[in-house]
Amino acid sequence: KASSLAEHIAQCAIDHREAWGDRLLAAFITSSDRLNQAFSELGPQDWDKQCGFLSWRRTPETFLLGRVPELAIHDWDIRSRFEPMAALSAGSLPALMERVPNFVGWSFHPGPSLSEPLRYRFELTGPGSTDKDVVVQGDVCRLEPAGDGPIIGPFRCDTSTFVLLMCGRLAAGAAFSEGRLAVESGRG
Image 1 (tube, helix red, strand yellow):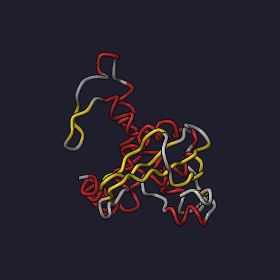
Image 2 (cartoon, rainbow, N blue to C red; image 1 turned 60 degrees about the vertical axis):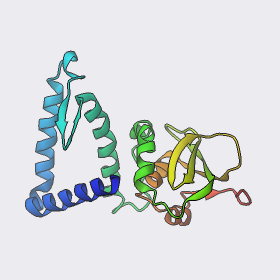
Image 3 (cartoon, helix red, strand yellow; image 1 turned 30 degrees about the horizontal axis):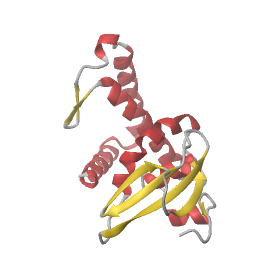
Image 4 (cartoon, rainbow, N blue to C red; image 1 turned 30 degrees about the vertical axis):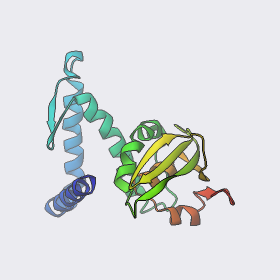
């Protein structure tokens, strides 16, 4: 389901780019200004009301909490084309770390079902950091707080690199070669 939604969103982005051409940035700014104005007019009684978004219903608060990480990730998408070692905005990292459990499902592509779980430990530094385990069990993947038991790793990186890895924006091979990701040798 996540991959079909991602494909739909990607196609919408391509369609918008083609339709708006060199006016795309101005259209985005105008649309964002209207959205910001709508949010500024909400009263305390409005934040838990349901509103439509794509095919879902969600509250304005939920929409806003999702929009901030989206803007941070897409800001990185643009800057990374001009700054090879671009990082996510430090201020966005705590909010992005809350969304990482959703990202893991988007970027995980299962292989053969595993009979025993594999636990990949990530030791993180920087804003919003807390050690995490990416657990692959059967043919699913999930994120957990660092736990007990045998691990693969530990992998060491900053929070920005971890988020980029988990949302599929940065490949592990590239992260290793750029020095963004390291692993303790001899540990799994």
